[in-house]
Image (cartoon, rainbow, N blue to C red; front, side, top):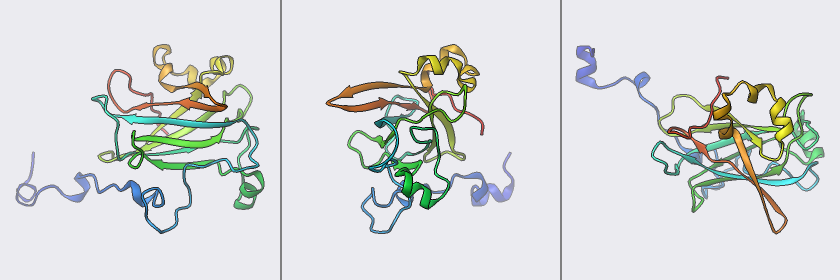
Length: 201
């Protein structure tokens, strides 16, 4: 029940979602001339691992692509290693973190240029950590991307095994290859019957 003050002056800032601007974190993508520390390219020329592209859309509860979402990914390189410093990242040719907004792609996609990650530890399947931000969300949404051509490793992964069998496919990116370009397709459904599994982190 609203108090007299709330009814006279509206909601307080703590009760509302503040402004969200994808271009503030992906400035170059949106045509601004100030620098940004990360973009959609994780793998440089000397990165270790199979070159891949990860692409997909963030889908709302009505099945429509969201045009102002921001997707961040983090992963090890093809050997399962993360750089430990800026100098290490330069030597490895691998940045381990990427960020892209969906607002400048004609199909409202995110597209990352990276390498297929190696397993970080024994018994764990290769995967990419994914964070989604968008207007109207108070908290980030955390999920994982696994690979369709890693069925044996996926079957042994403890995190994937904790997900109900009928929901696991929402975490599996599908591989395709055209003209030597390997692409993994991974749509993120925020709501609805195909809602992606999100994790409490």
